[in-house]
Length: 440
Image (cartoon, rainbow, N blue to C red):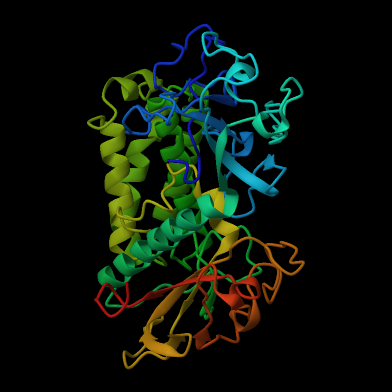
């Protein structure tokens, strides 16, 4: 639920008072932090066997705080690792380290729970960690200064498959939308329309919109209310919501639903979307019949959630809301906000809303005939400075991939990590074809 996050280490001492030491299970957070950022590899949590090195020692694991699995943590392509290695190799921007301690050296013993008795290479590990693979001072023979074997996982190594996951989730959303809407994709959200909540008419290129609608502002307000109320319901289920918030958002939802209902002559196609939102909130929320406690008692079968799902279904059927398969843009998702500024989208003229189907013209590296593409901006290169509403988005994309909403590109450039040109153009580009097998 937080792509790119890693578990806390399994500390050898019960620092927090609730974690069992050295049990192969990642320690629980204490507040917003891991109890320790250096400990044993949590092999049970990771679904691994109890891995051992050549000396029979269990593996150790050091985590950069920036990649901890915490609700307050935001992880995307710009997240940097705070760990580093110096010595025979110098590596920075490390997200995590796996360490094989080997046999005890220099008078140390492995019969205590002290990290310094196992790992000669570790100089310090704190919440803002720094690691140095330097020789210890208590060994008479420099060649035997330490025998730790370190494997570094850099931030780019960790994030690159996460970027692919984000791109694929965006592809699923868009292809499912096209399948439900006569093969047509939604307009993009204009590059200047931050926070990119809705589609912008005639924008073939831009950000992936939170909602694929360009409808009346009253409908937008109602959809925003549904999103907020859904978040409140989810928070109640997760025991982080409160009754006052639920009631307030319920009242706002009722008001916006009634506002749409009162304008049916001008919005005739919304008749199926307005009754359930009013029933969800209405006087029930204000009369305390809608409570966090009854939502918690039956989160999936609760009438509030059933009505809410029905209301969302009505919006989906009219192309105003993403389908239920769109996990990336779900209002209950807690990582879309971390990625929304980095995810771009372009639709071919023939597969825009109301377009006439034909042979699509979008290509990747000069090949293919694609209906649309998703582009994920990777780590900044060549002095790029992020600015979400800049046109063209040269702070995110490189070369011809960066263009204005009104001047769509027909050929996108993508390079594999490690290729010579990756240092100049590192954008991730994924094709869309309505769910057929011409692109994957």
